[in-house]
Image (tube, rainbow, N blue to C red; front, side, top):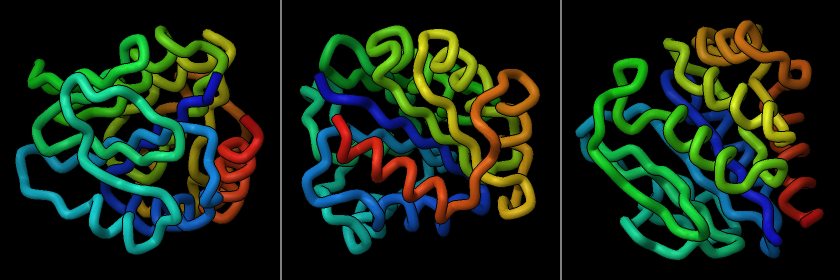
Length: 186
């Protein structure tokens, strides 16, 4: 079975996200899901990522079947959740003042895929992703956070570190290496 990689970004997270996406191998055995705090504002994140990726990138669609070697981006104003091989989108209440938010994705991924989940929390100015990282590591998955000195807004990775004890914080370059290796290993 393939692994699931979930990534949370907010303020200051685009540059490290681009490093991670660019490092993913053309034959990736994982499915990658990204949540960016964009609210209801239009987004061109899939187009930006596609220019830097070897993998196809698109906004997730409600009910879409999860496929390996693809990058799915939460669409504006929708939480993205994973359930038994499919993507579910909703406009439920904001989490940490955000919709889309990372915690709904991370928690649903942990509940559905357990130890096959890798969660990554990048730069951001709130605590979204912390509860999700805790859910991932509690079910045997891997929790990774960006180095606090490198993150432009270290609040999100710091919140994850305080709530849980994922691996030591990594620079964007090291995160890219770890995620790429994990993507190629399954």
